[in-house]
Amino acid sequence: MNKVKVLTEGSVKKLFSEIPYLQSERLILKKVEEKDAEALQAFTRDPEVYRYLPTFLFEQKYADAHEVIRRLYTECFQESIILGIYLKDTKEFCGLAEYYGYRDEYHKISVGYRLLKAYWGKGIATETLRMMLKYLQEETDIDIITASTMVENRASAQVLQKNGFTLVAAAADEDWGYPEPTPTDKWIL
Image (tube, rainbow, N blue to C red; front, side, top):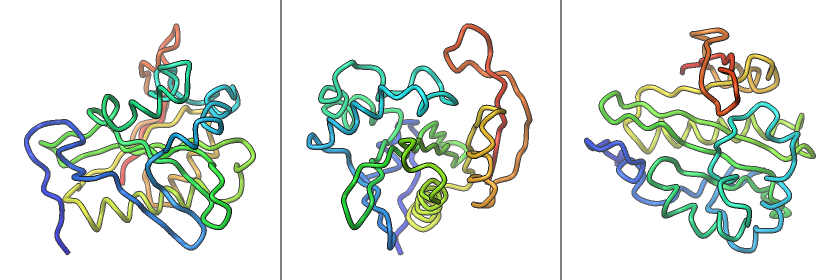
């Protein structure tokens, strides 16, 4: 299998030669399309979805979901790759999966995921992360995979633990865009 070579610049475009299309028996992770705008708009307006997330996520940068989708694979693609999470059988939009924080000199990237509340507790986040990790391990030369969670977000911590992540720093203050630093747990695989 040919592995994508990590080059010397920090843009994720250097790591991903194309937008990944990943599938399991139950899920598909793929490029978000214009037809997903209504579901994405509902997603970005749900305060429960963003309760444990930074304030500056790309999908919240523009008020119009169509504008977000138009810019996801140009403007956003410099810093991260965001994939839609869909149920394979019904094509329902469940949330977003993200590769971000690529550091070429360390062969490192971070991962994140966020789901509509209707899909919480169904194993979708765990399966999504498993698919993301498999892609990184089989298709790239990434050696270090990290994630961050708010200390209060125990459900996300469990998803990371189920996928083999280890807690390396607890309650470390980080700038997540809130008025005060956000205590976050740092994870590594």
